[in-house]
Amino acid sequence: VRECKLSEASRSLYDAAVAFWDRLLLGLEACLKWTEREQSNLTRLYWGAHQSFFKQLLNSIKARFAIREAEDALRKGYCVVIGLLSTGEAKANEAADRAKAVGLELDAEVSTPHEIARDMLEKHLPVHKNGV
Image 1: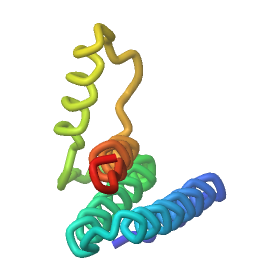
Image 2: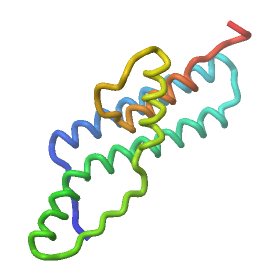
Image 3: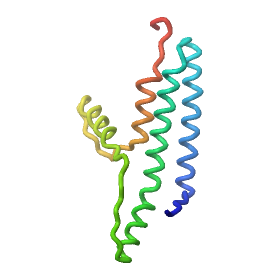
Image 4: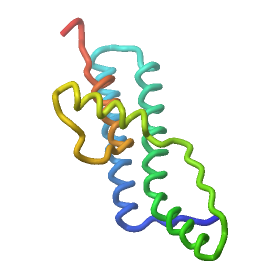
């Protein structure tokens, strides 16, 4: 087991993500109060998205480290096996479908953490009070 220390850039990215999700939670709580909605479902969705987001973010931060470790092991003559628990393919497909629906093509790599946050905002943050 190797320790992957965060660079300053990675630490800043992580800290900014924490601040974003903190603000999002405050916003969700305000929306729940305003609409007088039951908290459990939206809160459950928030924490599920939160967990998925940070899992993907940390995996992406560690990718370069894993590549360097694998290349070093190969140079030493070892066999390297890398297991991927999640590729982000589903979110990439969703982003491609969304772009295609408006006549566009993706011209950049899809960020799975970004797509998770987008889904949370677009699907669950719009709130209505008494049909308004």
